[in-house]
Length: 408
Ligand code: C5P
Image (tube, rainbow, N blue to C red; front, side):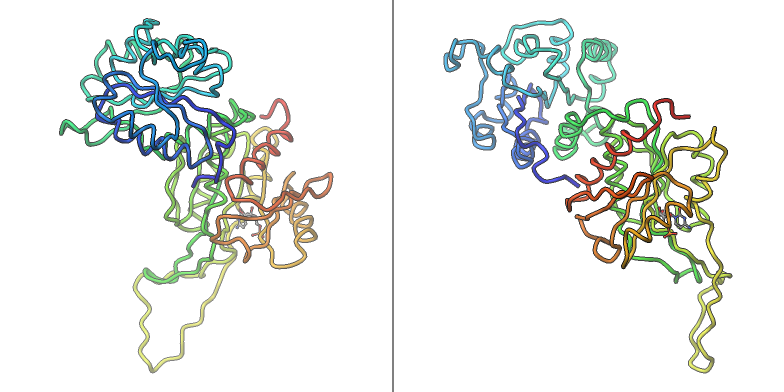
């Protein structure tokens, strides 16, 4: 899920070094532009053998630079001018040779030169390696990558999988969407750096028999957006997800569960290892008292079976009752159909949590946008309607601002 226009106002130098993954960088340029960034493409000579500067110019809407001798910039200093207006430099693909030159601080082509000449404290350098698995695994490459990272570069990937050479292993460049997401993440404030955040998301499914069950309309989108926003803010994130078909946000450790009891069993051993617990799951309040081992048959002669229900454990309230030393800072959700704030206030006190995020359930289930009110001890703080990822980022900032400085 990309929040629309997440890169508006950002200027990104997209560097391409030589490798077959250059074909993906055409799509990457498009993704970055679609997200609102202005993109300045710089290519090495080798990159221009894989994809033409003409293609990259058409997709970025700007002339492409390939040579330090290019006379177009005002003072004939492309390597200086190009990074002074940049918010970040993203090299994708970053070849083994390019990383080797970077590690040595070489400046024998425009891309290496501008990486060296960039204002290092203000303009981050992100590298998306792409190469054959043996090249990636080689001690020389690993040494060069470690040096580049020690010098301040951020590594994006590589991925594992099928390679253009026909082999399979580590070294594939991340997909354009993942790289664009990483670019967006790079600009988020790191308000949860060093913190561990546990999130529940999605519905639960309470089996009646092996083919039927009780569930609800929760899509899991808000919880997944929160997990992603927390990672972007620098947290280590564990996501306990009910049955949803959503991709795991990059960098999130995911535990899949089905029922409320399974969700509780997954959450409790994790709770005290995390400083924040965000209960975004729409946990079923009840489950069938008995789940039939075989499909309950309809025979046309008997009345429908009676469905006896028992109450599910309240996961949020259970975590909120842990002894103070083991208790993460708890955030609950309230999906209501009416009297939003009154119900949320009551829920906050009943569950014993510092913050409740209130929303109108039927208005948000399954949708990409939402409007929420934060309810804490001080009162109510409405957030304007927005897409769920934008709201999740605001929520993460709101949580970070409320966290005790020395959380347990
Ligand atoms: O009690 P209610 O379901 O309205 O409360 C909603 C909040 O409590 C949400 O944060 C939800 O994730 C959490 N909850 C829970 N376990 C339950 C029921 C709700 O963690 N059994």
